[in-house]
Image (tube, rainbow, N blue to C red; front, side, top):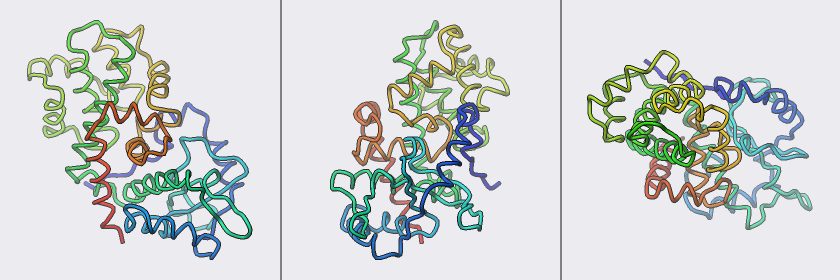
Length: 314
């Protein structure tokens, strides 16, 4: 069965965050940069002579990637996002990159200051994942390297966040968190069916035995992996900390630990991927030092796997 891409509007946090009107207003008022115009060719050349040239140039030149500018930059969570292209009238899903605080228009030409080039590269890397995901998510979900490294990265970040809250009234808090976050990542964020292979991957990463897992799964319900709120509630029940672990304080801690604008990475695959690739690119768009410390080599392995998949883009 073909996997259906999840939209930002499908996420719990987008629904409760009152983002719709603000994002729509900013989007409508923005100006589209003509990538074919001579005024932007200097920036294209800067991208061409950098690292991962072939892949990033494909993203830069893609008709499905749109550069926009406005008087006020988009919030960090919306520097790169997917939306129907209501400006062109075709209503196709395209990837929009807010270049307001990256590209400067001077003397009839756009330029990027040297210190902002890493930021531009980070945005293009994020857009690469968005392009692949919204064109054919099965290319990601069937890629064993991306699934394995992405799963490990999500679980390690999630467990680190739970550990930093210093909660849990049971043994093996970390192991149980790893197991459940793996199930959540695979079934909710990747959209996989709850199969034996999904359970096996979660069991492997947690190091728990079959009996321990049976006890955990007996406490799950139909809402456990429906969205981030249901997951946090189930995790709190299993860790026996319902009073101290709520969706609000978990999201607050996640943002504090990993950086402003990373909240949708808890629910939407391209947004999660951007957390990793932003840290890899080194432009300090998030709390990359913490992310590097938590993930180590996994951060590099994930990004390289994404770039390999991106090299197949036409």
